[in-house]
Every structure is written in C-alpha cells, then in structure tokens.
Image 1 (cartoon, rainbow, N blue to C red):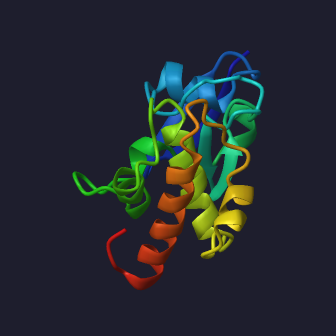
Image 2: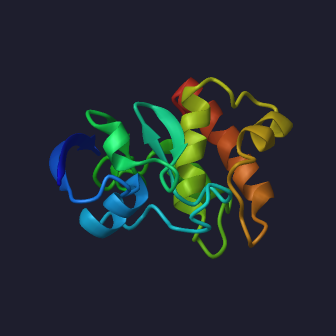
Image 3: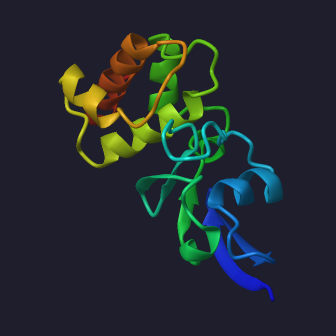
Length: 162
C-alpha cells in the first residue's frame, strides 16, 4: 500500500509516493529528495541538527512523519539563500564565527530563522540561548552562534548588514 502526499519544499511542489507511512520527513528530504543540508545527528530529536521549518515553525525533521505533513510548506537550509545572496542569518553566522566543524550549522541557522520569525530572539543573549537550546553544538561555538542570532535579528529589524 502506498501513500500519496504533496509537499512544497523550498518553494517547489513535490508529489511524493511513500511505500511506508513510517518514513520521517528527515529521511524523505535526505534520501529521496537529496536535500542533504538537513543533518541526521541523534535521530531522536535531542540535537536539533535536523531542524527545518514547516509552515514557518521549527521542527525536528527526525521526529516528524512525512505523511503527517501532507500539504505543508517545508523550508530547508537549501531554500533560505536567494541565489548567491545569503540569508541575513547565514551572513551573520559567517561574520560572527557561528560555526566550527559546520555539522550543526544548518540546524542552528534554521532554528535561528524560526526564532527570529517567532519574535522570540530580541536583543538579550540569554533569551537567544534559551530559544536555541534545542540545538546542540559539539564544538562549543555557542558564543558565536548567540552573537550571530542577535546580529541577524538586529539586521533584519533595521535592514542593515549583520
């Protein structure tokens, strides 16, 4: 038995046939659609490496069944830049050394974009750290990540560079 779902991923509609209703959104993105920017870290919803936006909200793609998001609008790290122009959060991560090895970076950036869109970032580093607490960095780049999120929030609010 197969299941037909439709997803808009990074502004492009995909009609997908699933042979198994247990396929996670993460596995669908990585294995079927070859969008490998979304990382599989713990595969248990504890590290945040798989963070994507679904209908504008942050979710752990490893915990989400693809079939349960039929009709959703999904944004992955591959969909945030505008051609060669980086998203303000991506620019801020570069400017503030918000990464080291880079494995967690896509999830961190997607979580930051969601946090800012939710109006939860503000200018308080402690508030940003709390809002980003679902995203772990094994390298310990938290200072740069926090600075990047604060700078991106300011840049997006004022229209200036991060």
